[in-house]
Amino acid sequence: MAGQMCWLPTLGGNGQKILHLQLASHEPWRPYTGFPQYAVPDYREPGGSKGWATYQKLIKAGWKLIPTNEAQQRSFFNPETEVA
Image (cartoon, rainbow, N blue to C red; front, side):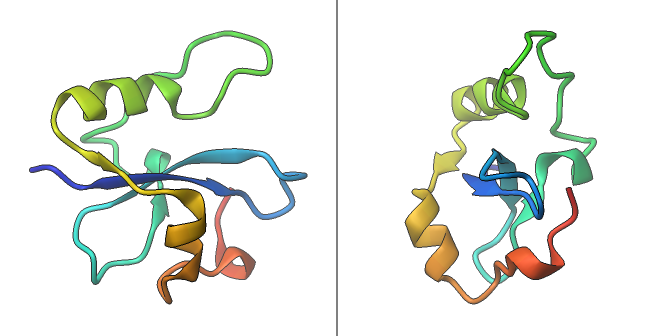
């Protein structure tokens, strides 16, 4: 099943963005760690992007990358309720 991906900020993350996934457009964006069936372990690089390895896997599987500003305009993303 191909879904959508987006890089969104974490609550209290000082602007740091992590990969978020969405299986259907009517569902909310959730951190990639909430999808153990799709997530793969992060690379062990200091300062590396959280979710980069998962992004690489899913983009090859046909998932679509949505721009951050587009995802933030949708009503299903609320950074105040985001889980880091």
